[in-house]
Image (cartoon, rainbow, N blue to C red; front, side):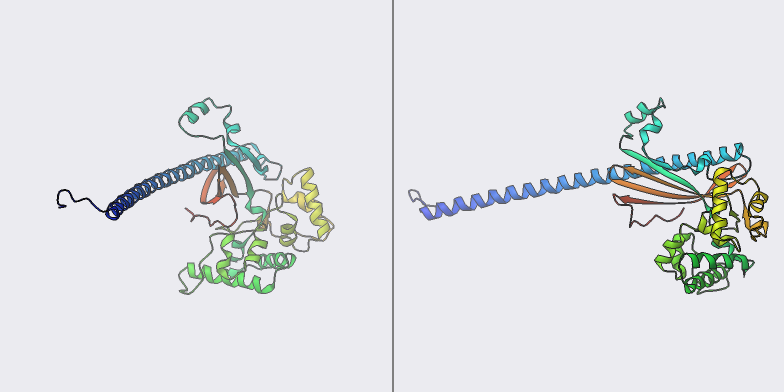
Length: 338
């Protein structure tokens, strides 16, 4: 305690004021730090909630789009002549369009928007592809044996795409080992790829997989090639002795009028030396389809692919895979199939 009448020196008072100022600055810094941390936590929670909401909304919208595709395929089977071709409604791709345009005629749109389901910035696009318009890798092996016709078909396809015989051998040997391993006969066999994008598991290069993707499918059962929907490359690979002129002739003829039976194709090719041969290898209708849907919601793009099987009027979803992408569709890994 300072004795009465003894005044503090100017230096001591200055140091006291400096300490008080420093303490005040530290207090302000701590308060600002805590406030910034709290705001960041709140912002992060809002962003996570918004992203989760967008993900759930996108999933439900894409489920609705898939159901729509199933309905189109069901109605097509109910109303057509038993054939599948590229002039049917399912074959027309959906160009990107604002989702609200699909809901404009629905009286429940206002209610949906009031329920915080904003569709003004949601854009939907998609397409249905006939997987029987491609060569089925599953045709290569039946009963544990390589099928000669399928091997010739893939040999021609690899040659036309400029892919090496080594890559073809990797595909054939890899599928043989994978199928044997799936049957419990091998412990070191490669996994059986669930789809074309996983063919790299068998040792194929990414360039080979990318080149094959538009022309091949990997289905769980053997399937014939649909002459009505196969592109020129697939036709040339699928049909023995078919030349480019005959392939173009098929394409032009089906654009004018689709083939109702295989006999229509045989009549068209009469005199060309081309024989379709086994009826089980070709068809004019299909049962396996791939649905690709894309939803763009604000800054998020969600892609979904689904495999559908149509058996009569029953359309079943075999698998679905989905990938959430930020702005750029490339480079995102799809989620596991369910």
